[in-house]
Length: 352
Image 1 (cartoon, rainbow, N blue to C red):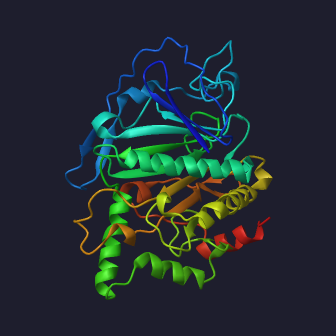
Image 2: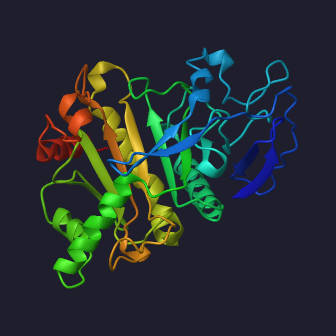
Image 3: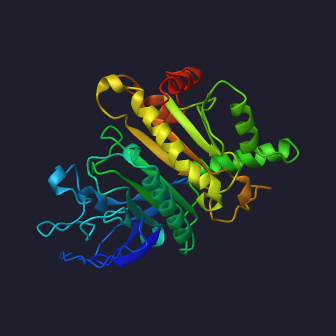
């Protein structure tokens, strides 16, 4: 992998990740851009104790442009884009319309390929491996930024999810706080450790799932399963079998195997609803240990957290979506229409 860092015309950072070591990146951004102005602000809810990002400038972000106006495609002499060069492998750049900015964090866009018509599942294993390297590198870099407490790499796919750009891409958020979801997991880790004389909750959950009926993919270094209390109709958690706290902790063997395992899992999700003729909308989310001190979680060390990828779709059956209505949105109590065991069986049926 070769990494080349440069800047766009408005000062935002852009990084090329190339498969070939001899690739040279010198194309400048020739657009007449003004400096980015953001209104990102973090406000804490005094009742729930969680944080909300207020980002009114995002109302003006690019919204479903036609393919020939895509800002994530490579530049051409006639149409400059967010990526100055005429081709690329993987690119990461600062979001022009960030939810988090300055002291309130940082948001980055990850372009998986220059092919506008592709999806992550269409990447080769070599290309998917390069995306993994980019995720890892950005996690390392962002973790050292002042104020960053957690790094979140994720992909939203599909208009049903709310994606406003059709080009295959994901995002990385560097939060200035520990997210509510992670805080809940850390509290559960602490309680389980205290109640069991030091046992690790992630290890116990993984052992239980590997021995049960919900495993959908079992490789040498990775295992994917539908969790016992799945929130979503079709949801899979992908864990490395050796517990590590973040992407930086993966060893060479796990890194080498990940692309094939993940691509297979994505292809199975697309096969769930083949009769629709449309790709399955999904969210893919990497859960990593915070880089913040964990003093608030009695007895929990950073290495107690287990890196894992959560993949789920909001589609519950062909042509029907799972909406977060009263119970889910109002009280955070999910109601799942598909038994996790049935979902696991279906994901095994659609294996390659």
